[in-house]
Amino acid sequence: QVQLAESGGGSVQAGGSLKLSCVATGYTYRYCMGWFRQAPGKEREEVAHMYIAGGEPFYADSVKGRFTISQDYAKNTLNLQMDSLKPEDTAMYYCAANGAWCGSGRLPDANFRYWGQGTQVTVSS
Image (cartoon, rainbow, N blue to C red; front, top):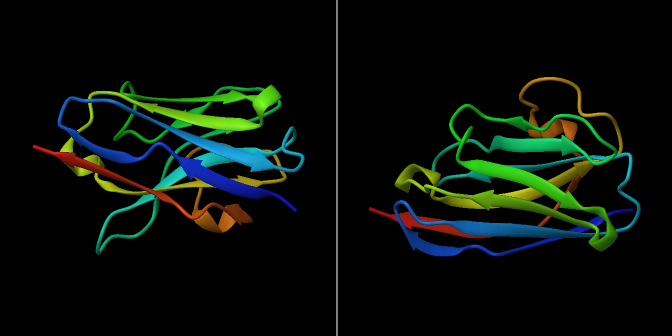
């Protein structure tokens, strides 16, 4: 059983930065972990993911070059550094985990078994 807790959301102006963190309880070394977001009236979409044991991270085209996913396994933490934020990045952001290899490309939320409660990110123009 894995539990996830996000933090770091807030309100910023366009062009600003935020860093989200997701603390996991339980074993996550051979897990795929990622970040999703859901804006009002829209479907939840994957932002980025990585396989904790190693490998290249994946980024959605909409955030590539602006967001960086990283992990601190000693602290059992998954991070998402978000730079050059845009109003269209406004959403509830969720951390997700699944005890398997990530696979390739953008992943649907059905691939992830464990979810955090979410943290709100609001970017004003």
